Length: 222
Image 1 (cartoon, rainbow, N blue to C red):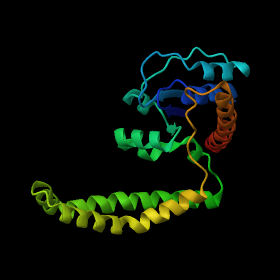
Image 2 (cartoon, one colour):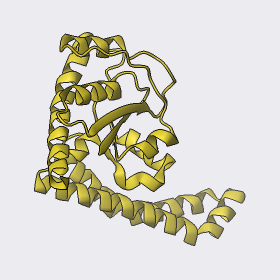
Image 3 (cartoon, rainbow, N blue to C red):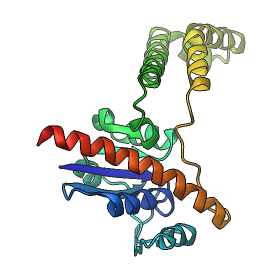
């Protein structure tokens, strides 16, 4: 069984499009998809632009939005977000499933060089978080004192020390991100129908690549 949860903001544009394409194109019944929004409301219809883009390809949907919930998180084998921002939100809310959370575009990267860069990127981001936390913990007393006594100069000096500590990792992150394609699907909400058409074409290609990966994985498990 491979249960995929697609996540976007409101679960009315991108993630329901991904879910619908996935369900329409899958060739194995053990593959299942659902979608939800990190800021989603319950039972809102999908956007008209998404509905029209799907209908143009013969995909008729009566989608009603869902908010991301613990139940959906437990249901999923893998959680694929539409942007890195969504990924961070889900990881922050459900850290216990962080190893199973990716952006969709990140998950389908198979080129060895890009995979290596993604691993390097993740490591530098981890180092930043760990070093920031350690620095603040080690200087907790000073931070409290400077804030209480409004010692602006000392506050600025400490901030500069932290930035200097993190600078090599941030420089590496900027360099790697420059070499990698964007991992986000742009939000089409409020755009012309052409925007939804462009999103559909990009999403369709990504879902086809995703299904290839999942089918290959399923074949190995059989």
